[in-house]
Length: 452
Image (cartoon, rainbow, N blue to C red; front, top):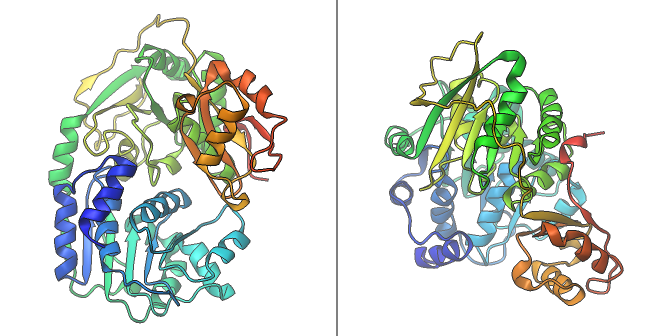
């Protein structure tokens, strides 16, 4: 495999035609160093930066054990990295393991062993303990967002996983924020540090404006509503809160005022979290209300605004929240809501103000799309092409009207024009896809469903 073939796949999947300066530096460092530490801002293309050299280093042939392991702190980031790996490393089996879905599905995907294993520390260790996977012959280790992976909550799991790899040739550590100390089991020796934070953050500041919006404490939710209504109708906004208990009430408030919103937090079922992200990315909702869980690992598409409904609790939280917008070469706007009785943290430096209008438009158009939920996916042998053909052959819609499709192990999400949903759903309910009767419904209200 060559870098040109990798870029062809990156172009087809993501419109990326060339490596940026940081990615070129990583590729060069990989060839001359066995231990690399990369610091680079969120949204700068770190996943491609480590994926390209990793794929080039893999050996063809039948895998007995994984050649490469990528560890991430969250299931969302594991999914994102896994999808990127599958796209760019075609020909090399990639398996992604993480909590929130069935272990049995993962066990089957681990036999035969993948060439690339992507996963969260706890789930990787779980498969090791069950005897589903052996890592003693792993050649390459990547720890993505190592600042989070190496926190105390992950330390015991990380130690057991990393120490099981006895023949590592190269290790790479990636983060958008630096850490003060490294745990002893990492045992850094001759690290090559590639720090792109100063240069990268300077570039980012040219694409991202940080504005302060003043409001009254008792009027915070209403002020947020007026703020959102004053933004362009095409905006796509993530609203960050500090407490998961704030998510659902805020979503209900916004929806009752004509602003389509869904929630995202750690107490939601994994399925509902994935539904919320898919609806946000495919244009079925305009606002995602989230805790800091959504500040890492989620590659949202074309986010125009980040709103800090509650002040971030740390500089790292501020950095990672803001990293959901102005990604790669796009621009974005960050708005910090500050009530009269609050002090602005020293790490926040607004370069302007945002005046929340008293009388924004009273009505708001619904998003153009709505999402259908198919209760069948990859494990039921359902593909994107199957879904498009099924919809076109059994309804009045044309293929060009079918929006973004996400196919997971046991379900699929499909965006279609909002004004066509009821008619389309009526046409499809009695039809079979690949000879199977699959339940179909309208996705939504993800923020209302919690873990049992």
